[in-house]
Length: 123
View (cartoon, one colour):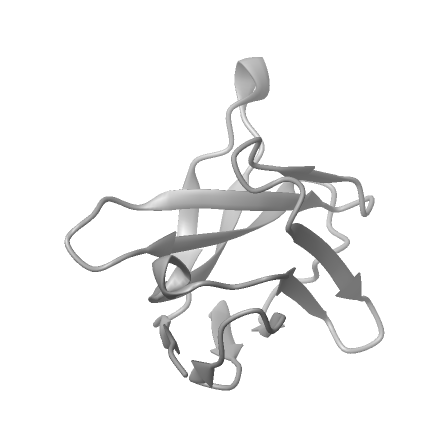
């Protein structure tokens, strides 16, 4: 059974850096057929993919967030992390980590999700 669990602060002040970690069990983040992503859903809005890290550690960040987003991993702990700098109240959202399975033509549909963590940005 694959399990993903997000952890983080819950509340962040404007201009600070948000740091989240996704702990993975039941699968290795270095397994070639998988990619690992961070996503978020602001209140009343749709799901947004923030970025992806592959089994080889190569990352892709959403162009709209690229300058503020960094994704990294700790293979010894089987975890991957997100850092989002200079947060504003507009970054308030439920943040999810997910696993994607590499498919044809660059596709990677998600098959497992974390339960999500509510992050609020407020002074």
